[in-house]
Image (cartoon, rainbow, N blue to C red; front, side, top):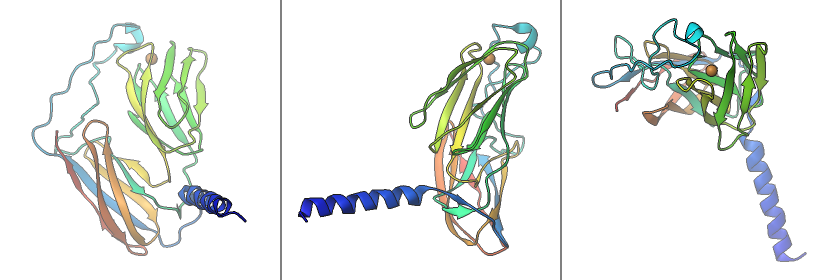
Amino acid sequence: MKITNIIKIIMTVLLFSMTAFAQYTPGTVSNGGSITGTISFEGSAPTLKVLKIEKDAKVCAVDDKYKEDIVVGKSGGLKNVVVYIDGIESGKAWETKYTLNQKGCWFDPHVVIVGVGQKLSIFNSDGILHNIHTFSKLNKSINKAQPKFKKRISAKFAKAEFIKLRCDVHAWMSGWIVAAANPYYVTTDEAGNYSLTGVPAGTYTLKFWHETLGEQSTEVTVGAGGSAKADAKFSS
Ligand SMILES: [Cu+2]
């Protein structure tokens, strides 16, 4: 056999095993641990910007809407940070449901998580037209009208990615779809708190992603049935 052919075969096997390696294998976790923490915003919280509602006022302008690019709670907690375990290969099962709603001309939640290959149900709770538009680099982009009679559409994502989301009908509607590589992805609440559960014992790279403030990472070790803590601070 020619040496070039041997190299080709080795390369193919290597590539295949690397791809197989990247795939997450869901299963059951006995005596899983947890990782919890608080993500906070350092410095004085930016003032919330009121958004201009210029269309479909009867449905969309029933309340004031504020830009959600940086949402800081009363005690300095940072909302909508995605906290996730990077590179975990096996562990708990995927969630059974992933849901995004368009209600009052607003994406709820602002940052929605969906597992890679899992179904995201996208609802239109308003009696008006919306148009889902995603800006992907790794996945196929979605640009799909959702008229008032189309209460639900669904979408799947083949690759892990943080995807910007817009509505082409309502310029102020903005969100993120996070296609998650594994089920260990959560978002922080109004107080900046998060909780990851069912984590197999081990040492992991934990990442914190925020749509405008960037990404950070830390190492965390979880014992069997144990609880680890990991906080982080962001500033602009
Ligand atoms: Cu819309």
